Length: 296
Length: 115
Ligand SMILES: [Zn+2]
Ligand SMILES: [Zn+2]
Image 1 (cartoon, each protein chain N blue to C red):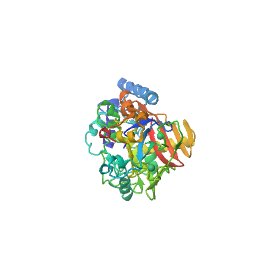
Image 2: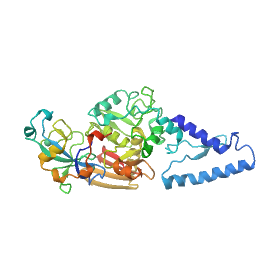
Image 3: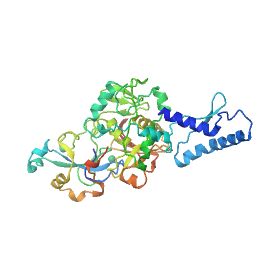
Image 4: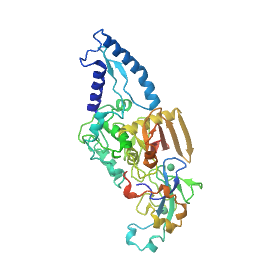
């Protein structure tokens, strides 16, 4: 959550700036060394992210000329503060995706978008802002840590009654068009259907690992994060960017390379392979209606 | 819920399991004599991701897609996910005569399934 992000940001700043927190005011040898280190970090950060699929925070200058850590949607696997947060809320496990109550879960969500949505973080941000700069929760990290023995539980770590600015948007992204149908900014439709009763409930299966399956693609983050990734994948697919497409009897199957980590390969095979990261999205559509989407 | 028994990974979407589904059964079939339970039963192979359906336990044969909002069995037109249909267990599959097609590496014990 933002607390952990703040902790991380301040931790990074202080380590880069020394205890006195006035790193750039003095022209000392130490100050120069720090500048050199920050420059080296700034140079290496995007390359490391690209090379290893990390999400190291970037650096930028604030208005006062201070170099600060950029807020990003990273999920640093070594973020201890996030790991601490992980243990705070393991209560919510989205059993609804398993049960026959899938559609009723969506009913509830659409009925009151500001509260009691399973998997909804009730984030206070505008629809496009949230789409473009997703705010990551600490839960992301914990899920990715499933390779290290944590249960594949998706925890919400979210207040259920927190007001949201996105009162009309499901998961801060989807517009309710009635009859349990939701449209995303890129034009994808999420409708009733699937064994779970609603495509969103089916999608929820890909928010948590399932080690009973031979292989199982899992999105990083929560529902809103997965939905944003899927939307970005569809935008890429429409532009034929790093996309393979096949059409079969009215069904369109896209495989979109997102160019960075968007999830991991879970299930038994994934476990054997240490849950290698996934950077591609498989998107199965009937017209603009989502049938399924998952990382691979 | 995932299929209990599958014959292959889905050749269309790559991530789904082509699971055996038995349809045309009576609800609460536990209370129905086994021989009657299967009187009108028929098998389907259904991908649990993209919902492609095969009528034979062989994914190299032709497939169909159900209506994406009201998926129905292509044989009896009952709801694909309704109470007359379920992921087949070993007894169901034996009754269908499809046992030999099962790839047991893809078996899923529903008691172990988490999501
Ligand atoms: Zn499939
Ligand atoms: Zn049928």
